Image 1 (cartoon, helix red, strand yellow):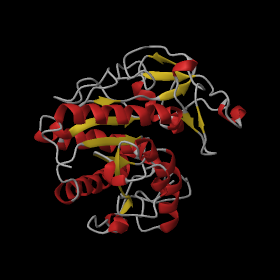
Image 2: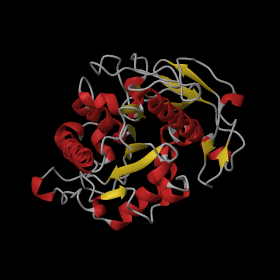
Image 3: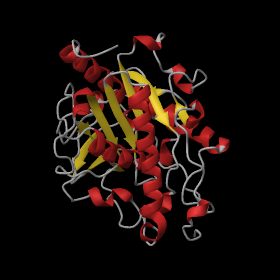
Image 4: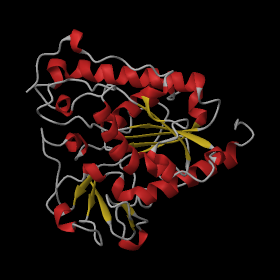
Length: 327
């Protein structure tokens, strides 16, 4: 349960001119991302604007929105989302990730969605809009951009693309958008299309992952609305519209022991979602065999595949547009 939405209880807003309002930023030198960046971060040709997923999920937490000044919460973001998700793009670009007053997980389900959840979502997205506006006006300097996010973060990324890129000049700077763990219909954007080629630019990729033969459950899995609903799926191993892969095509899963496990996953695309085997060759495999929804692994499962693909797309973008790009 939560208490009714009361405007006076909205947490203090971020100030994106202050480094303290960013969880990842090239000027934050103690970031965990230094373990993933190339030796010289200035060699990176692109920027990555990454939005982390929902990390306030505790049922005992009666807040509607996260407090970005909560150090414990921010450490959780850094040690989970930044280390195991944002890091996938660290070989492709300098990562900017704003802290934002994300909505609590409960807002994705009724009766909470209609009774405060939508307002909580607006507060979260307005932070993202302000962060991106500050970034474009003060930090980007004309560099090409990767947009990346997972779950709630991907929902905000969708809206960011719609408001800043779709049918607008900024699309010319879009390397790719990785909109992972959300449902997208083909007609959501006017001008931005799914990409079914591993070198393609100026479009998006998306998927939702479940254990083989397991279907999203209504009112329990946000990905339910992808299932049998013509949602876009781009294969995160082949980066095309292939409906099946084999183990030898999988580049690597990043596990919580910080090791990468290649050839551990094969997938099939089924009615708007991806079905994965229980990853093989990893520690504590039996735990994953008990989970039906692999949403939490949407990025980890394909970490090395994403990392390599982001570099390829960035290099291709640079090769095609080098005369227009400021570095």
